[in-house]
Amino acid sequence: MAAGRGAELLRPPVSSGRATFLELFFDLAFVVALTRVSQRFAGLGDDTGWALVTGFGRTLLLFLALWLIWSHTAWITSRYEPEQPIIQAVVVGTMFASLIMAVTLPRAMEERALPFAVAYLMVMVVRPLVVAIALRGHPRRLVPFRLVVWALASAPLWLAGALGPDHLRLPLWVVALAVDYLAWTLGWPLPWVGVAKVGRWRIAGTHLADRHQQMFLIALGESILVIGVVFSGADYSPERAAAFAVAFATSALLWRIYFYRAGLLLTEAFNRAGMPGRLGAVSERTHLLIVLSVLVTAVGYELVIDHPFGQPRPGWLLFLVGGPMLFLVARVRLQYEIFGRVSHSHLIGLVALLLCTPALARGAPMVGLSVVAAVLALVALLDALRRWGQPTEISASPIGGGTSDVGDSEA
Image 1: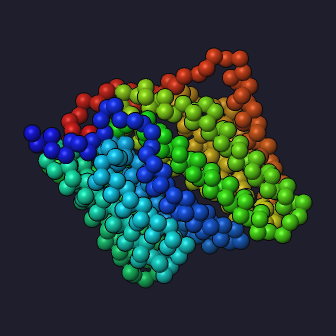
Image 2 (image 1 turned 90 degrees about the vertical axis):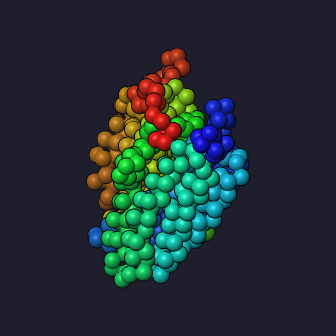
Image 3 (image 1 turned 180 degrees about the vertical axis):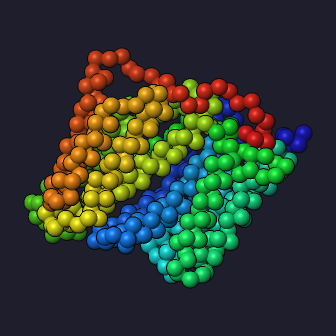
């Protein structure tokens, strides 16, 4: 009888795998957030040495905090019925807190640190507490209870970083975020309660795959927004027009490489997985890298459109070449997760970019972007040629095999 109380919050087996309109509405907050992350990265274009490293690290930390919020939300709506009023209230509340994080993000490591940290902690502490109370006597209530305990453990570090001296903020927040990610990885272990590793959770796998694909498209849309805004605000010249066209082509190639064919078959792979939670845990980390790579690449677009034949700076190469290289690394991971093999075309692209990097460091930014676009076009062409005349490929993921035999308190 106890297990029946709160069971109405769980996703039924026949639930649709498609994201609800509320979840798409929720993603609008992350459109704003990703734009602010991109702007912080773009501000590092003229930095060098230690200033570039620390600036990149600060922005990366803020992005990882946002990603944890989005990822937890995606798992919640894959485990619980998003049509239930309490789950809808949780999603709307998370959206508001995420929007606060987004608008404070440009100065979150400076004078707006406290509202950023408080908004983050409101999600990490209050949200699982609400879910645990709503589940009432259901055994699964122990899972959000674990999240609350671990979030309270890292909360003092977040608040100390926000309220303390500026020079301690970065190290304190690095430790706090490391605790939050370590808890996520280990399954929030607690004495006498055990662990709840996400790989063993019962989820709507197709829904989680759908959410990962949508977040990639949101990041790609942010890159298109950067291209349009920067070009429309700059003085027109044939060189900037050419940079605008090459930047758009690069984004189109990223889309093509992602969805052909591994990204397209992500949902099918989740459908075939006996334990979709295990595949979801791995896929979540891969898509973190993919989204980050698209954001970093978009900064390269901005720098090139503004100064297509300007004097190259060391920091530019990090965005111009580093972003696409990170994308190919993540795409190699995705290929293995879906097909159980490594893509030679993506490895060829990685090697080509590595070999070109020394020369690109001395060339004009426009030349660098054109070379990156050419390498990505080569990868896309090799992908297409490999499958030319072949039967349609099906997913054969080596991850997520078997069936879950854990109790509701862990799943």
